[in-house]
Length: 115
Image 1: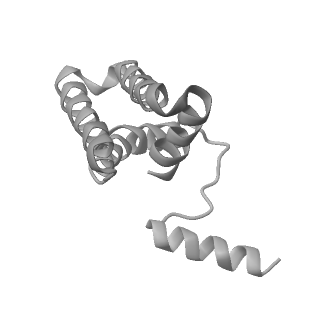
Image 2 (image 1 turned 135 degrees about the vertical axis):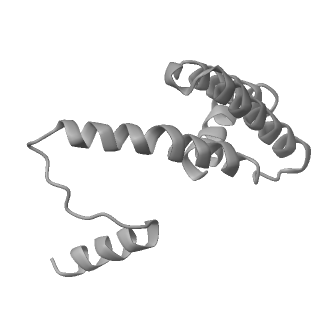
């Protein structure tokens, strides 16, 4: 949410202004979604509708909650399996740690506090 909605949104507003920036931000993410061909037409259509509704809601009342839905689905249903597949293809790669988000953060903090 921070990277794709807040930060990227601020960058578009800084670059194109308050009126055009949010529209360009939305259009860019919609185009990016369309380029992911392996989603399939049904999932892509559902994600597009959810993304559009999220941008509409955010423009209406500043609430970014709906963005979490399309981001979570994209991560869980597309990116996670893709990364898992790519890891399995690499025999020269060692996975140092696996866990939930909070477990990974805790592991990273322990790792950096030991150096």
